[in-house]
Length: 616
Image 1 (cartoon, rainbow, N blue to C red):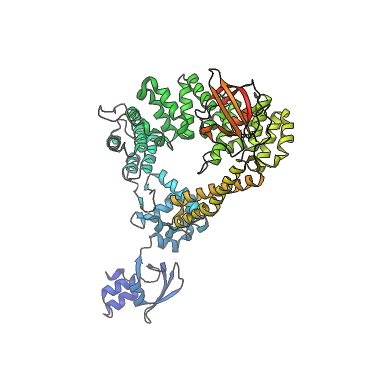
Image 2: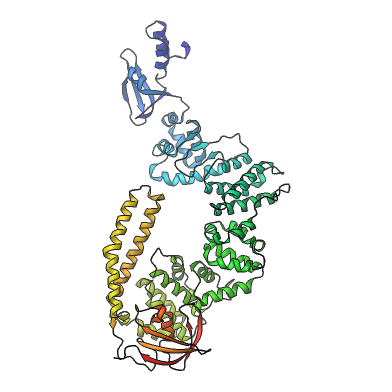
């Protein structure tokens, strides 16, 4: 026992001047040894003076600290030389080399000194600043975290409230993959673990015996969780079927839940559950539609086509075209374009595939659908859903020329007028887009320079509608924006803005309100008030009532008023609306394709007569 003591201390013990236990503890803080202090961190003992009872320790956060030996014994804990904190003091250069060279080894050494498990806050304190430069730590950790997961020797938490755990090197690759799935309760982490298993099925034995327990766990979860966790159940069933298909000796039992059965019974909830799923998972789900829905699978698939996100749109389009449903799919798209019922993801797909898969349905009407959707989304009360669509219209330099390629002059003028008057675009973007219109169709030059460059002092509307718009702006400025500011302040107080849903929602609404305020202020600066008197009734103009008749003899009347005077249920439309722009300039006897305000479908109507709205 005495031989493990420092020689100077051993002499004191042998002479009976200090007890053996004190000698052993004193030897732990002998020069060259390591210790740790609650506030100053790890330290290395530089020297001591036994006769005076003093010791000098170089701590991580307090260098050359002189302490009384008795105080040092009480306030420090011994630290093995191989401990990570000790190695930081003695060999920091080697550890810093591992930062970029081998982050997995660096984190492994850190955890080995902490019983194989650390909270992420602990890991941050051990590495940030001392080993990994503080300004680049966050970026380094994201990269290191990915490497840790790929190494399969760590359990990497999805939340900072869970520990980072070192599993060790003794586990087989197959066991490690299974453990990654079983040790977490987080559905997202389980789905990621299943992806890793599917990518590495070859590491399992040929009979697949290691995955039998996994298959049982998946079946159990899917039976119980289909009502509350449908999106996770879909992921699990797709993964389960792929794993079973890989091994000849594995097959589903008669009692096991089938993917097709879930699609049939839960089809009303499919849309929300499919959003966010990977393209591969969505494709497997769509491949099960014929089994689930029989002869009506095409109809069921098209019902959700435009609601399942950009990945789903692409996968449905590909699946239908690969399975001989080109005409059915094209007919659906054509009708949806005509009815203005397609959303941004579908319109983006059509534009991107306009020379390939969507060539049959890409027409001038596609451009009208885009502008119509952008305008609707702009005035909607909520976060914009068509940002990607607007970005594509700006970034795709040939899109407008392709839209106008087969349009006649009247259609090109209508498109240009609608684009120019749209509140969606900034002045700079509007000029850029109009330049493309002119380049594609030079015959519209006089329209642009004559009508648009004059700018006609903005739009025209009734005095009553202008007053309503002013009151709406007043409410936004005096009520809604202050309320939103308070909501942001309250949400910020909840902390952790990265995962604070209330804060993100309030900030999104702030952007909507500020955008709406700016747009309305600009519109009110340039609007012209009118009472609709003295209008020319030889053709349809602002302030006219248009009496029309369908092929079947049905009588239809539209009233064309100002920009903000629309009352859809009474067939009162703005002269800037689709219907308004279709009718403006028409004369008695003209037959036009007019959009029905209730069904959103086009129908042929003939102008019978035109009269003034204000006959005074």
